[in-house]
Length: 117
Ligand SMILES: Nc1ncnc2c1ncn2[C@@H]1O[C@H](COP(=O)(O)OP(=O)(O)OP(=O)(O)O)[C@@H](O)[C@H]1O
Image 1: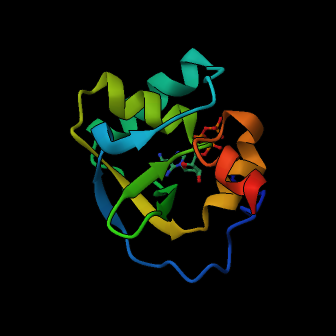
Image 2: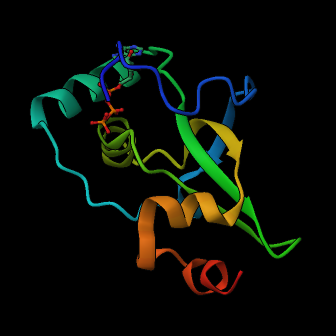
């Protein structure tokens, strides 16, 4: 996604930035990386830049069980990973399980449930 391209989640109402533990975020789509871009992001983060928050999709299903997915932001993710950051700044966007299934198809952990509905 380029900076000029608005996210499909723009307008979902999430304004707050959370420091989300990287260990709880699932990244189901393999990253294709431009190494120079990752290095530039690492430099920016180390120099204190306020990076654009990642968009993290948050599914609470069944109630009390929380799942967090990051589908994009692979360069920022890799930069924070290489810097061994325990957390990443993110907007949490609450979505139903069917949104994850929409993106991941049969790889979605909610696929079977969504197919039964
Ligand atoms: N030095 C910086 N300081 C703050 N924000 C930055 C800086 N450089 C880039 N950004 C922002 O970080 C985001 C990077 O998005 P970009 O699409 O380029 O990479 P990504 O989302 O991490 O990876 P990808 O889109 O490939 O999955 C953009 O919103 C951009 O405006």
